[in-house]
Image 1 (cartoon, rainbow, N blue to C red):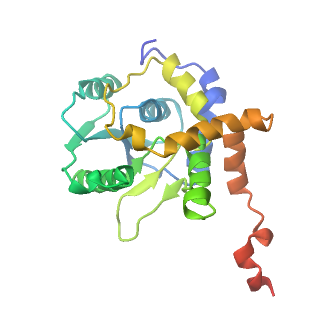
Image 2: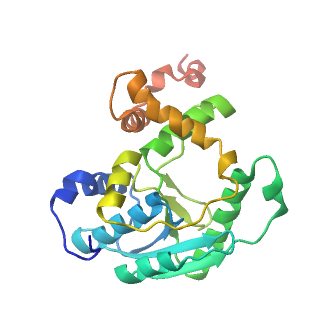
Image 3: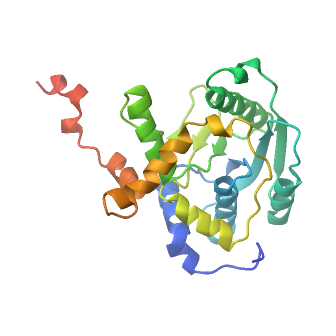
Length: 249
């Protein structure tokens, strides 16, 4: 369908209300804020860009929207620029500097840190203080299990990460949406996908946890496990968190 073909009120119940709820619950977007989407070119980030575009046009939220892409190699990104142009959204791009550390045993972690540094540097030049990432409920559940198994740590990433000293603030407006919902939204609006595959994709441990999270619904004969995980993180029983036991004596 055409990206600018109008508004369907059913979109509110389908996905917009959940995104607005996340934005308002965690005070993600201030009045007249400048919000830049970290556009990887995958389904999650392009869907987030389009959802925020809809909110700038059809909601009470008032903010300036832009997008950026950090190139990691010499591949074509015209499809991302074209999407932003069609939406009337400024598009920025920067090339990630090569780093020998990507040849280590954990290139995904290093690359993520380098990308965030490049994003912060670019946005500071543009005087934009908030970057929006396309992370969703499944990402939260995957990170939760990775933290337990890999790091023996209880928790996941936060919907909002504020940086002291005026650094770039990170927001994740799609934390109440599951990946299957995002796939349907992406397909419904016929949004583009960047034709580029990361050379380290097969080394990414998250693939294992992604498969596991999707299988949990069948294992426990339930539905929307990832959303329940988000609800659980918002409803923690602090009286039964072990580090707090001694504090209660």
